[in-house]
Image 1 (cartoon, rainbow, N blue to C red):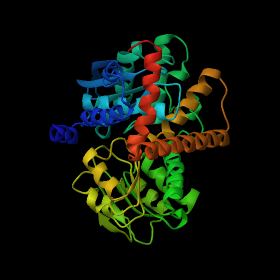
Image 2: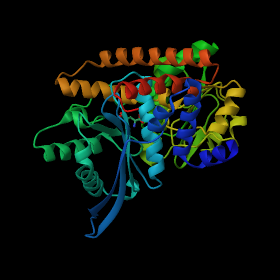
Image 3: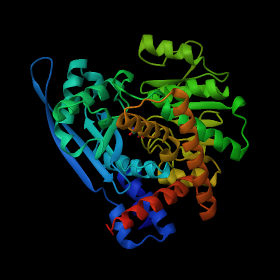
Image 4: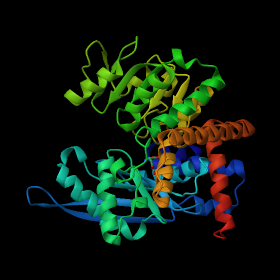
Length: 422
Ligand code: GLU
């Protein structure tokens, strides 16, 4: 039975999410009724979106919005545009958002959205029409008090701007609190752009204290060069003087043992479209980057990257999961036995949703904050959550992921029980 669960889990992100939840539910001796409620999403909407393409044709896109649990507050979570999107991936990501907002003790629930599409093959006008069509289809289950979307893989502040505008048109008045991660001109928050990576570095700073690692001498490898990956590289240097030895994007990667000049790598990516071929670097693949000689590994791309196959070869002492779901349960067990300090995704990358929460608060109040207030409050939230997770992991003698689940599931379970749902 355990093996069946493990092999199913290694294929399907939602099976993984449920498997992780079950581990924590066992430790917490969760009431079976609560367990049944918290194992499944409360609501999901599947939509078909006819979109007029620039050549006059109409193309049908499939999309989803999953609200996993809203016992603690409105659902919150990003929208992904990806050709390989599946409803099970969105379910898993919605579950992880629920545990993420709970571990950070935000007054929010968890949700996620996705559209099956390849945004790289769409024109700007097509992307805008698709974004507006999605909001037209899900508007009746979203809103500042119901469900608040945000950016995720391949979605941008501009896309959030169109979506907020579409939602506002449907309501008949400007509704900035309906979407976060917006452009600053539409009352996005200062500090939302680098929040995921900044929060991850605050968590790494705490982990480095635990294992006694000097960050100013640390060598860092980063998989993925989107929002989280690029800011993870620049902030690692800016905040701690770390050395970034390897980065990859969807085309491949580069390695330089003496450290990469990230400003120049960014300029290279801007002019060529990829980090690949950066002068003075060695070519590596997206699989190689997980095994390079580094102290800190930051997976900042997609799910299921660190598996039973490559986990024995991870050299890093800290794995900081800026991506959602990058490590399979089998790999988790291997890393834990090898004493690699894994900062689990829904703690490590929670800086994004935390500043999204700040953005929502600013929008609801109509009162913008200073950047330093955002940074100070984010640091406080990350540091506190890290400490609570570490304490739970030590108390139950489990890894950090299971510790994080224990903290988060207990909070959502208590709210669910107090509402009388189970
Ligand atoms: N998509 C990000 C995440 O996975 C941010 C979600 C949000 O800001 O609501 O946490």
